[in-house]
Image (cartoon, rainbow, N blue to C red):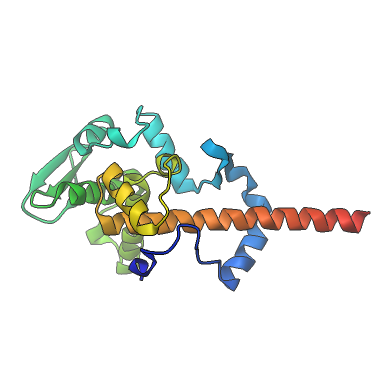
Length: 217
């Protein structure tokens, strides 16, 4: 479904559904504390996960895509990685986590797998094999969300000059962050959807303020 957008203009973004509309109206004012300014006059709001990942990188002096080298990031985060012939997974030995990554994957896939597996020691507790299946599924969804935000951090992405189409911008993201094209396209859609939602916030804020002033006068 994402691939259907590859030749569309970068500004031709799908508008929120009625369900999302109602949610945004109900939550606009209590979410204002998450709004921040970024370069070139762009305003976005950060989710709790984006704030967590931004702080994780900045406290380890990682500021740009050029620094996102798997082994160096793992060293800064003090999370050992090992390469083997099996599927990627995270294990705990002697109180320390070790991330195992399949050695046959491409560099882009290894970085993406690292982002997924890193979520477990940083954000989860317990061993997945002992969890009820619904909790296992929930952790995997959370790890996938973490992966997209960790491998292509919002605070770096928002500083990039977007190209005129989804296709060109996805190529730029893939090259800059060393991820696969499909991964970059999904991440771009996530980012633009959130940007569109914020534009909706701003529009609603102005309309509510204008309405309030009119009624007051």
